Amino acid sequence: MDEYMSTVRVWGLTCPGFPEEVGRARRWTRDILRECPCADDAALIVTELGANALVHTASGDKNGSFHITLALSDQAVVIAVSDSGSAGTTPRIKRPDQDATCGRGLGMVEILATRLDIHGSDHGRTITAELRMSKDCGTAPGERTC
Image (cartoon, rainbow, N blue to C red; front, side, top):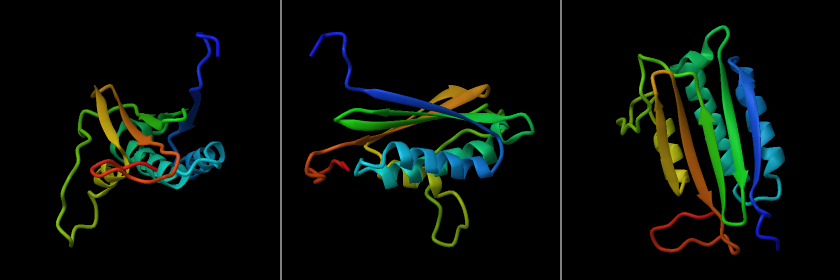
């Protein structure tokens, strides 16, 4: 292979800040990753992060939007969801009690992902989740792969 060739493929989708766009983002993710054993986990992560962008940031405002980037290689699927930010909220993983009716989403993403990063400020944030691939879809002790 030529040294300038990459086996990483990258897709992007910008969605207007409407609730139905989360479903479109989920279907888009499944379509792209239909041959990938991580497709269901990736679709769930996109759904959760997209919904969080609409509910907790300016992305859900009248003229808001959120952007999804999918990167696929033989080793991993990387999902990044960028929002419009908000001075009122900061994404964080919560540990709610069993009777709580919300607050589990980002924790669920953390469990599904091999790695989770949150970057940005009140003017916009990007949450990136990585799902590692394995040929046999097995897991090594202490590492989640799909």
